[in-house]
Length: 465
Image 1: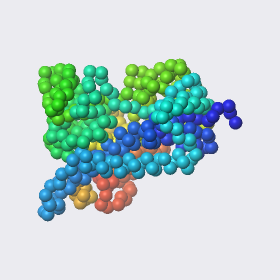
Image 2: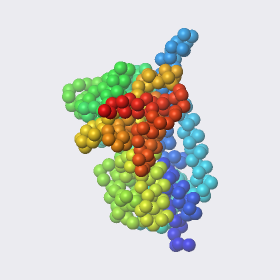
Image 3: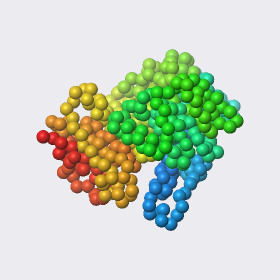
């Protein structure tokens, strides 16, 4: 037995913290997990991934219902308010908290609630809600404190009509018009959600196109779909002033434009939750976005302190954070750095319809002068798409002209985040297993959306000469 209270302390119970704590506990390590909120799950469960995707699901079903000719024959179009769809979200959050609480109980991880900060490299002080101060020690410490919405100082976020992506979940009124500032993943997702509820949306984008890290054909499809549904996209714009009034919000842009709406959702980036950790006590310093630098093992400059998840920046995905936590724990257990994340991490963006991609884009392959070809399948040509009336969207496969190795897969349409994993699995195969001909030589269930792979593969192979 060591002289420490625990073998490891994990700070934060989001996906990264959970992944680390579970792996360590399953290998019989004494683990304490500190969570500053009153329930486990982190920002992912309470304010980010889970609530926004639950909101999106409810709104997508509403859109599907209202657009289906089958229901138009006997019913008037249905409406929901933002408060209505939040009820389903609250139910999902409760189920997630119960599920994850059970993980810690079964694996005998000690849960402690309160604000944690470092006393030294082996000691963590916890300020509990009732004023109690608890001090615990451990050989290893994992920082998994996540992130929060970025808030510039010149915007009054205490105003009742100005929200960020966390506080928007407290919105009680059903706005007629909302301004969403920031057209990244969060901004685009909420633009889809509010437009699906019939709210007028102005989406202010600081860049010249939406989600420029994606394949351009996919971003063009999203831009057209949002525009076609009535979202006003304002590219290459920045605010000069945001003013909250009793009646709404006025946003003045540097271009001279003025936009007025019932409320504002500011969704322009996130900041790592490191400012209250007293990092200086252990010789660590976060960057301007509150993020920590780590090596390939997720080890910080202090050898016994690790960091995972949003707090280390890219890729800032819940899915990746869970694996980062698991891998960091494995590296701690083995006292080595043997595990890595997979190279091709899929991206899932829950707009309406969804977007998902893995691997290279056409723009990247062109810049690298890789001889590639494209295979496409349109959802409107698939029997399952026609049956389910999910005809908006397509699947695109990029593959090497000579080796036929799959280089990238990009999908736009309902269930994209599910469909992408089939292609991802083939891309991970070695020794010639990654080959687009797999989809031609495999029998798919019919009718399915997965059949898009066979259609796209045949389309692409037909382009070769």
